[in-house]
Length: 464
Ligand code: AMP
Ligand code: ZN
Image (cartoon, rainbow, N blue to C red; front, side, top):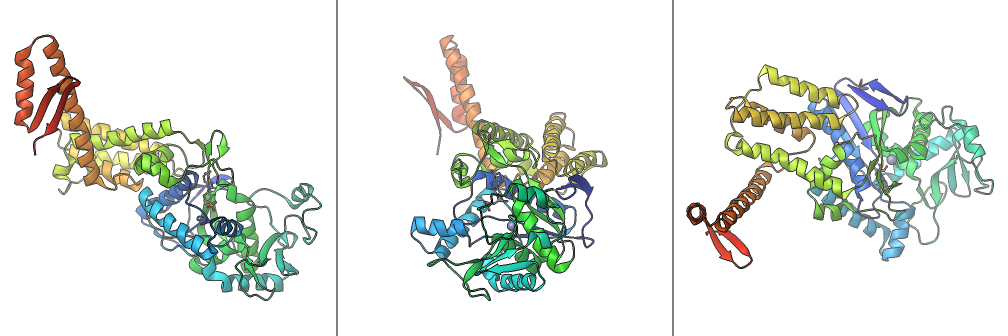
């Protein structure tokens, strides 16, 4: 299995730190608003990585944090005139509602930054004691020059960072790139007591502490979207490795942006669609398909047209299952014949080439086609291909409410077929072929479908 590692900028063979186990830390939402579809894309990419590794038999521990204290939450609390913790609760609840609607599988834990303040203070004290941090009037900074290796993730070097600095920015800092570990509180802001006075931890410290506390000093995968490479993840590495002297993360994975009209979708640019609003209009699996039909590292442009297309594509998978009457044999015990395992192999090869979900989806469509062909040719193994289709599709998160979806899809299809018959009947009447037109009406009646000719056309309803 090969994974693109931002640290080496190459696809590397995946070898977990401890055999058989995978520890994943994902940078979760800052809970000052409901999350937008750009965030949803990134959360979905985490979900796929975790689910696929679990399918491969690894014992996966997957943590996603909730950033429940920062400047944006404080601003939102002023805007909504609610305390910061109430803002956090409101949007954490919203986060869980929306990930469920999106069909994301739950992480093993969702630590909140405010639950780890003591541990954060502890880390900052250690950094200060060992000469990696300095205090200026209650604000504590990490000294980037003190850490050998600063810039290794983002490829930036200290000279370059200095050259880009504006002199007037912050005279307290020794180097422009020095970042805040502890921020002194302004009046009225939420704060905690610390050796440096009242204040709160910096965002980069929060993730290091939650990752180390819940997963240990060295983990396998740490992920987010590309905007987190610098400074967030670069600064996490500096703190963690300065303290432990060990590699913090083996594989750094970063997903591409969801853009809108060529710009990153973001709360600050106000060019976003909330996931919950999009899910009012489109099925969650359509959105999932829209994202997964592209590689996770590519940039995608938001397009409702493409989501509609994705919806049609997903429906065609359900339709294939309906056509072969999957519901009738779904509980049978069916073994997948040897020759069909080639599809699983293709699916796995795609996923193991840095999670190429676009290629994996193509395999699922091949299987849908094969299932229909096998069924039409009355080959027995149509059941096996349908089972494999559902198994592999489920890894990508499709077919979650299979029974319900199959029933609705069938209804959709029946409705369309009745409409089709009725338009044929209208043509027959125009051609004065009354006999055949009446036959269609009577046969539909026998099936429990009542039809009525009106001035606007023929309407139908089911007999109760
Ligand atoms: P935030 O709530 O801003 O902390 O972001 C949560 C996650 O969504 C982070 O991993 C971000 O990198 C990611 N993210 C933010 N904006 C986008 C976007 N437009 N496209 C994809 N991922 C994004
Ligand atoms: Zn983080």
